[in-house]
Figure 1 (cartoon, rainbow, N blue to C red):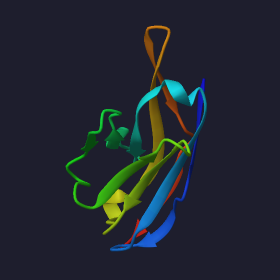
Figure 2 (figure 1 turned 180 degrees about the vertical axis):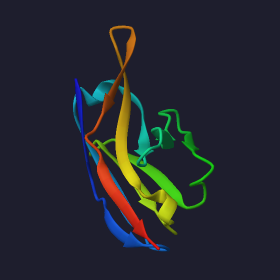
Figure 3 (figure 1 turned 135 degrees about the vertical axis):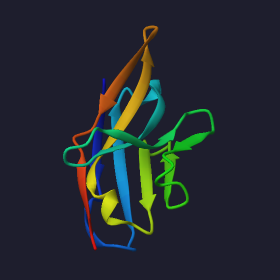
Figure 4 (figure 1 turned 60 degrees about the vertical axis):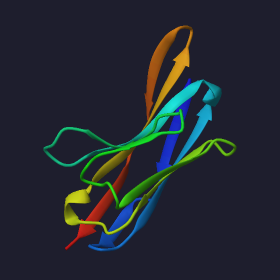
Length: 119
């Protein structure tokens, strides 16, 4: 099992910055990819940024150049630095980990943290 706890959300003005943190615990050795998703009211959950576990990262086109994902394996932490925030970035942000155990890929989610960007 992997447990994920997000923090760092809040209210920020457009153009501002926030850094989200995701603390992983449990069977962290099994984690391969880990990243951030978000879900705005009335919209589907979407991928924002992923550390693929092979040295590569993937970003949604809407955040490329503004958001940066980073991973500290020694601390079992993943961060999302969000700059130049826009009102359309308002959403609940979730941390998601893909873990490899017993020949299967398991997915784990955190409880989410609210990010609100005011115009």
